[in-house]
Length: 268
Image (cartoon, rainbow, N blue to C red; front, side, top):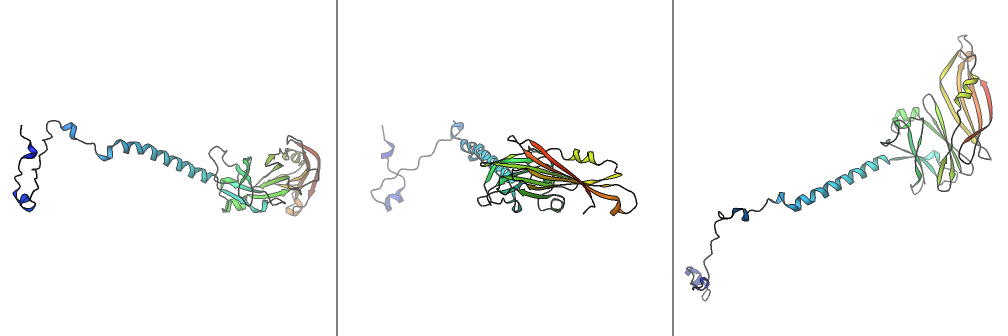
């Protein structure tokens, strides 16, 4: 049997330029018509590696989207005027509202003013509408007024939220590294009971936290204007009716009304 590799190459020009070198003529590849399916390769875009990367990319995009949403929900607005007397706590509003909160209610938390770390969990201030408008907007700044009354030892705080026509007080008791929300009694009903014989009542009711006492009792006042006579002179016809409460709280945060004081005077 003759060996193909030992046959002289017909490329005489190559032999002349490189004596002693034997070159074989290039062997033609067989026509792919016999087994065409064995010689085909899938396009690069349809490779298994490409399909394997797609779920991973989708997962990464999903995680990034969740982190972006979480960052948006955790946009805190620190209220500098709420800083505690010892300088270790400040109240912060969270905006925009989260998906699981009641529309219009305030979500806030306590924050360390230097480290900006949250103290405890987020909480809601029910019955308020501060987050229907973004902090810094005209509606928020003019129709939502927050006041903060701390006890001298920085252990008790009353957050007072006066809205356009009404207000609410949210007291807290400091317990270690967290704050315990305290319950407020009904202040409206006792005031309404004293508005007897009036011709007309104002739609506006104001709420105020006056101070914390030595035994951490809270003094708060609710007031409403009402018309007593009809002379055409508002200074004579209208009077401010206010009811002052002295409230203490038990270990579970339930309120106890210690005393009340009712006053009728010319509106300020």
